[in-house]
Length: 209
Length: 209
Image 1: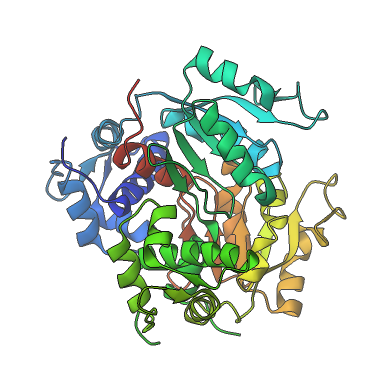
Image 2 (image 1 turned 180 degrees about the vertical axis):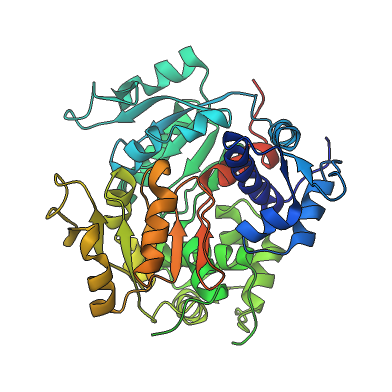
């Protein structure tokens, strides 16, 4: 698969994957595009289009083989390629993400957390240790980690980002509400919760009060 | 503005808004599209296009007036219309979202949290109280709340969803990794962290190991 899938398609494929996992757990062998569409309240032609992108065709009248389709999505989205990341900021959000076991099934491994609060250093969350930020550069080198998930408070976001870049971090998944200033060779992915919320309310019809 | 903005445009507008807030805090009066584009590592024609959708034009050579553009984005995305929501599940993620003060600036008010653990009932997080789930129906009616942010563990997601719908909740912002089964008159917005992460790694070039 060299074709580039749009962000929206990737997003939907992961939702289909989640539905397929559920079906397989329940020992259901086949799933149809209307069944998927129905669960997501979307149009079933869209589901068929997305799955056609994977060059996969269902069986007439019975639908897709759940196991096959699941594996195909995993291959397409490269779940098997393990990516290791640090969580930077061991507050509630950092802790929540460290506990989010689901990440590993998708090839995403959190190997450690970092904070500067003495109260947090040495804690273990879901078998992952919280280290002092001072140790980040060293551990990033040793473990060959280039991805950081940034969950520090807003006020420290830029300062910690500069520090991460100095430590050799190349990819930042930014959960802070700040736009970070970084050099062009650093990739930032903004997990824009506010933007996501506003898509929900502006375009998807939350009633006005 | 009756025009429908795409989810991507809404997402970018909130990022521009965050940059504008930063500029205004620093008493900088004007901002240019290349300055915005540079901070987000994107193309400046895209920035200009997005802002043109708001029917707003910058001043030649100096750019946009930061304050004006900020207000225009706020009006377009309806920040002034307050939407009240409950957080359901007072674990780390629920707590993190309750502490996320930034929401209020965008018209989003969390009025209470709910859980079923006796250890959590009565706690206060950022001035918001944690109530037992049993009280949700009653409080939803009293406070006219129709939005729930779902942050319970995966295993309880569907069961709690059914309960929320019975309580009169109409909109669910789903932070669990489950696809929820709901009737057609209930809107679910999946905060698909895995999907977002995979967009980042599959399309935005996280190096293979």
